[in-house]
Image (cartoon, rainbow, N blue to C red; front, side, top):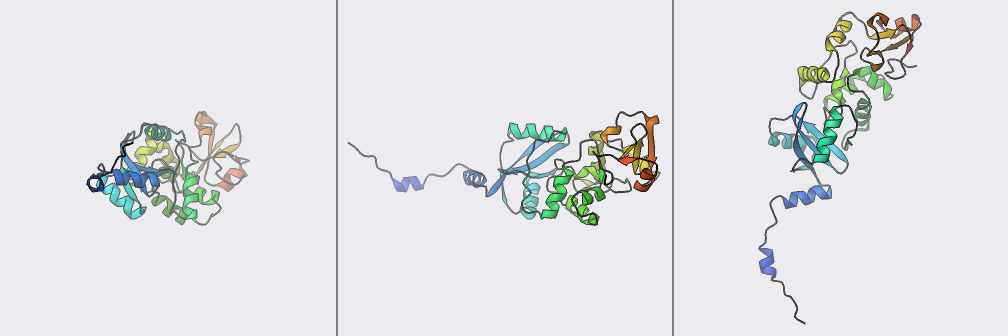
Length: 255
């Protein structure tokens, strides 16, 4: 029976397809894949790996996104065609359906706790930085919470734009500045003008007379309440003194 022979010299001259090595690294988990996705927020570069989405940015160019990712995350990136299943998950996530998984490796346990708690804030609602700090068991670490959110590598999808100052002021935003933050919140249904009016008047909470419950002003429990059924409070002591108890959903104070 004849046996086949292999010309090793000719085999050595064969070149792998362009990008083949990078794709092998991505499959092996050494590099992340990325693509540009069209979203309701405009074009967004998104990076991901087997653990989930690792970064997102509205960058002027792919080169700028790659450079930022290399500095902040420290792994290689491989550009691929946008997969349809991830595009669907991105759209759902922006519409308030939590379908995405995230890779938060490289962040401190504190920062991870901040971002995971931020994921709990519903679309159309906001919470103060102090709420995040209290919820994760570090009530005095409000400034550190702000720093963790400012360095969020996955804005838009981990919604740091839904966290505002305790005085009701919108505050800054690492995903594009205060105006971008206002734009996204408005898109999600937050009544910014009303929120700002309450903030300027010094009101932090709203109570519902029929239930004797007080909430943050954007809590969904008050979305369809008759305006005549609202009463407003400057602080927790004022609400409790009036006989109101904190909402168990938005948790404006410890129940």
